[in-house]
Image (cartoon, rainbow, N blue to C red):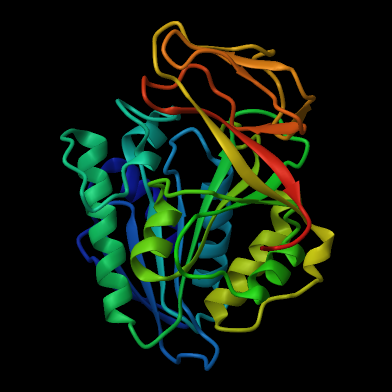
Length: 328
């Protein structure tokens, strides 16, 4: 039954029975795209885990990854030892395999959100689901892994964004992420109202946005490269200590600037297919905008991440980052 959850979610209708049992636990279908798993027997090292995907509807590899994990759970080859909330974010966009319908869902996870529309309504529903889940399992340490793929190539295809928040990241997380074959970490420099930021900022959770390769249609993803990530999700859902490797094997970057599209004539001054973490030398012109003016690289090289000149007015068009020597 867990294996059919994606179909139920995309159809927009819950089955007749919203609750059921599988070998190591029970499941509760709270709503389309929102599934909670509760273990029969809780493991001592368990977290209150949230695994989310499809916050952008064209990012299918994380959905396939969660599908493989759920199928193993239903088959009994994975034994649930910790509560897990599984979320598929933007269901209409996932159904059509486009990034979003009217606006970027991954900029809306703010309790002060006043906007109306399909994606703002979905953001409020997902925030409420996160709040309720963490409240139900309040004695446990909180964790949220939000799984994505990037819209372009990258010098480091598998990397992690650490949201900015007051609560620190536990050192063990970096060791787990290294063992999960993550290649780089990007430390955010200010609040950005993404889904993982919501859990870290409002709940103090250990939370990250994962970029697991490049966007591709269902059935065309490189799932072999994500086996270490599947091992991490499996260990956490079993309530076990995940595999660990020295964090020094990853590269770390810190955001220094955000390029914001202020006007219709905004443009990035480099090729549209420029890969994430491409390096630009001092004096290089990176962007032009009728309101913000020109942006040139200063005295130190900068690396570009998430460049996208076609974002909405007022939205981020690129992050500019520099290497740092530690996990901060």
